[in-house]
Image (cartoon, rainbow, N blue to C red):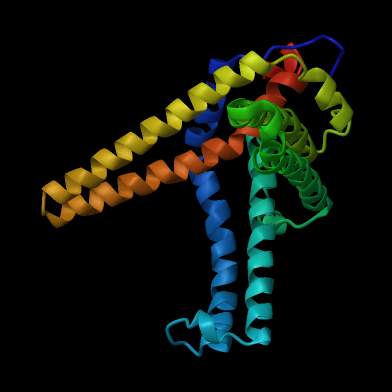
Length: 274
């Protein structure tokens, strides 16, 4: 449920929730991906033999039909990713476990999720276009009037546009999670209203998110250098398994961000305690 009371996102609480869910449902996420992978393996093998004849890929000699086959496969893989994201959000927020074909769902919820994501991409594209226009077009045009100050001013405006894009991305992402769980009361308008005045909270959350990802990257780098220093095969095996787990958790940590924000802004205190 949403209301007109402004809520402030707790940066540490939000990142702790995302980390906790990524750890708690580690094997659930693994099963989601493996289910789609098993379905795609025969299709991938067929496409490989149809396009490359089972040999090493030669991208310079592709025919239009080959490109079409690869494009269809890429689109299918993309929709599989959307299906995984929807099931992940529903597991994290509703504790829902798919049944049967629900593991590879491509229903209306997934399509609504796709359209919501496309809207977000369009909005981010507008920000990117504006930032490019300021840096590449406005700065040279204003140089005769402003002199050396034109370029720093353009960079400052582009940075402000980037921050505004980041805040907008966070605000819209909570709506994306609402689409995934079928919450029709948390509309785009409601998300925009409920998440207002959270700029500093979003900056704090970004800091902790980047800190967490950097920590995972540092641990992964340590494991990589450790397996180089010790030639034993078991060290290499353990190191690369550890790196793989860290990468996997990092991906699902980022995937949980919309659910983490939605949970805070849309749930009532009673619902948050469940």
